[in-house]
Image (tube, rainbow, N blue to C red):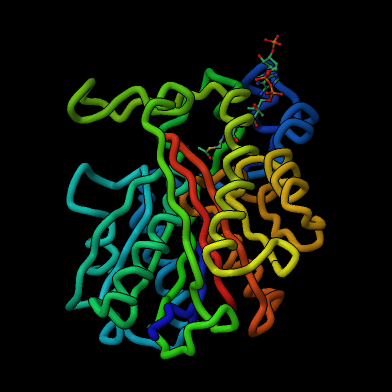
Length: 323
Ligand code: ACO
C-alpha cells in the first residue's frame, strides 16, 4: 500500500523578535503573567509588507532543499492558513508561483489552529488515492495582522511564522511499523463558534476583523478534545499512547500542552516545545515545531510521532506518523 512519508521539513520565522516586555510598555500586563499563564516568552512578528505567502515560500523552499527535490518534483501544494494575503487566490497558488512550480494543484485549507493537521491528513488522502506522489504541505500565518492591540487577553498570545513538510508516496507493508502517516482523526463542531472567531470578513463587515476569544472556555475544550483525538488516531493505527516517542502538539499554551500530555500519560521529555519562543502561530505551529526538532536531529527513523491541534470552529484533530 502507499504511505505518505515526510522526506523534508523547513521553517521560517520573521526577523523581528518581540519579548513579553514589549507589551508591558503598552498594556496593563506583565512578563510574569504572560509566562505563567501561557509559557510564552517571545514571538516573531512579520515586518510591514511581509505577507503570509512570503513566509510560506521561505519555509517551503527550506523543506524542498532538505528533501533534495526541485519544483518539477512536486504534484501539489496544500497550505493551511487563516490569514491569507488576499481573499483569493489561494496563498498556495502564490507559493506555487514563488517556488517556480509549473504544474499540479495548489489550494488552501482553513481550520485555524487545527489547519496543519487538516492539511496533512488531506494531502495524505490525496497521495493514498493516487492523485499525487509528492505534496508540499505548509502552515503559514501572520496573526499579528488580526490582533486587537487593546485586548490584553489575546494579543500577547500569538505570533507569525511558517513551517513546511514534503510528503512523498512510498510503498509499505500496510502495518503499524510502516514509515509515514499511519492514521488521522479530524473533527469540527460549528456550534462552538463564539468561543474563538474573527469578527470580520468579506460577506459580513467587509473588513479583516480582529480575533476574539473566550480563553478559559477554549482551554477547557482543548484539554478534553486534544487527548481524545490523539487517542482515537492512535487507536485507528492499532497503537497506544505508551508506544509514542514524540508528541508534537499545536503550540498554543504550555498549560494546555502539559495537561494533554498528562492525560495521555506522556512524560514532558517526549513533547516538542516551541511555544516559549514562537507564541501561538496557529496553523504554522506544528510544522514549525516539527522542523525545529528535525533540524536538531531529535527524531530517529522509525520513531512514532503524534501531532494534535485545536482552533477556531471549533476544529480539532490528530495525525499519527512514523518518522
Ligand atoms: N495580563 C494580565 N492580566 C490579564 C491578561 C494579561 N495579558 N489577560 C487577561 N488578564 C486577566 C483577566 O482580565 C482576568 O482578570 P479578572 O479576573 O480581573 O477578570 C484574569 O487575568 C484571569 O483571566 P482568565 O481569562 O480567566 O485567565 P486564564 O487563567 O484562563 O488564562 C488564557 C487566560 C492564558 C488565555 C487561558 O485561558 C488560555 O490559555 N486559554 C486557551 C487559549 C488558547 O490557547 N487559545 C488558543 C487555542 S486555539 C488557537 O490556537 C486559536
